[in-house]
Image (cartoon, rainbow, N blue to C red; front, side, top):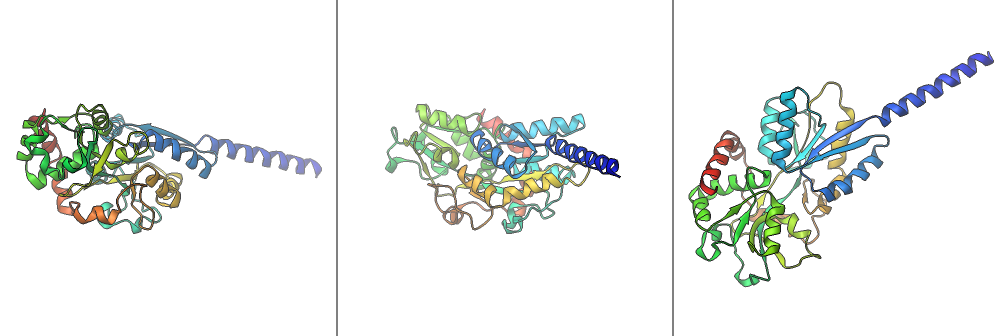
Length: 332
């Protein structure tokens, strides 16, 4: 009898050890365009929330992340479990192909309808916004450009830069909205003004700081990061509307229940996840959470922002390659 008890205890310990080892071997891969400082903030939070789980990140610009996922998909296996980046139109395509898990994280029901998939294939976790920026050492506030449209004026020749829609999801979204608002002649006029469109938002910031291009079309979060380190770089909400971006979260569809990936998605839409988005100088997508420090109220942004609509999304998906080709032909 005593021997049986000892054996049972040994087996119990072995079972507990095995479960612990199994848990410790779990890895969640997150592919994202979130900045490295944001990853450094959320990774320890996630590992604390999910003991024994390792969180690995692949970080790059939105278009590079999308390309990596596409390459892995063609190879037969997508390593990523969770995707977080700002190319809404790419996510629409993946959802239509059945590559994303239909799951509605807790609190995602509070996110505005235009910013999520009705089946739950993806949901916007935060709102980056594209604004105007200028170097106040070069341009006094009273002379700073007031709108995207104004950048076609001759006074801004050789002074403006932006990211490339071939490299940046937020740049692509901005081009799509501006092309819809002003047509392709707008970009022809920008080209006549020697617009530089290269890389992502970080490149625009470098050109602003070096004074090579003292005016930029760039994400507000990049400017707010410089509040204490380089206050020369100022932001301005364009009168023709800041472009609200959709920083999307989705779960890659795989075999099994994917319970862990679902819990991770829940975390992003819960208080800590939404606070992390605000700390990263983006607007949280779940109402009721404070916005980024130093940013205008989101309600103010939305008053003049061009509206996301089903028609706009559908048109942009259908003309995605055409938009990139047309922009390349004109600007490059």
